[in-house]
Image (tube, rainbow, N blue to C red; front, side, top):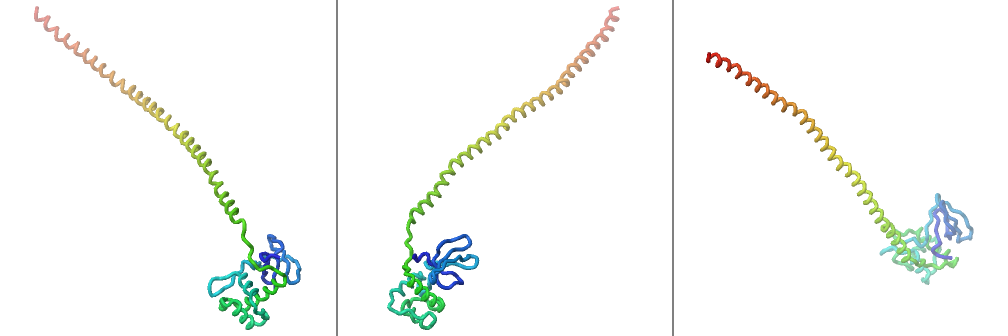
Length: 228
């Protein structure tokens, strides 16, 4: 039986082996009577023993360190119901415990759990963490892959933007000649309107010239009378 599979369940006495997990709970096997049952996660919480830490006067230590010290000690485990005896036991076995924050109920629970683990011949040790490097490499590979795919997408987007800019720029260039043509037509119309005004001037001169031509004819008559 693996220590990593041993769990404590809130509201239930003793320890359990985690058989399988479900979305709404877990199937556990009691280390006291070997009975198997489903425990709902909506009602109970599960705590792996390997994840539990204990307060000390220095840094916190894993529960495994306490169990190891108890296993290596020659002191006889006390009656878990005797608070004073339990405290004296830990003062000898693990004097670095922070007795102000580790309550009597916690120490009695550790004594009880240690007895259950020993009776079920559970090797008290943390599981060895393996295959960390491959997991990290795969995570890195997953991060790198999207980065490579983004480059062509960015290039494609730039190409599409450039094409759209050219399409938008083309009508603007064609609009300029059209405006010039309209301006040219406007100038032509202005020239056409101005043309009659210029023609009117010669007409006036022509009328003046005809008036001047008639004037001398009137002056010529007296000269003929003078000869007679």
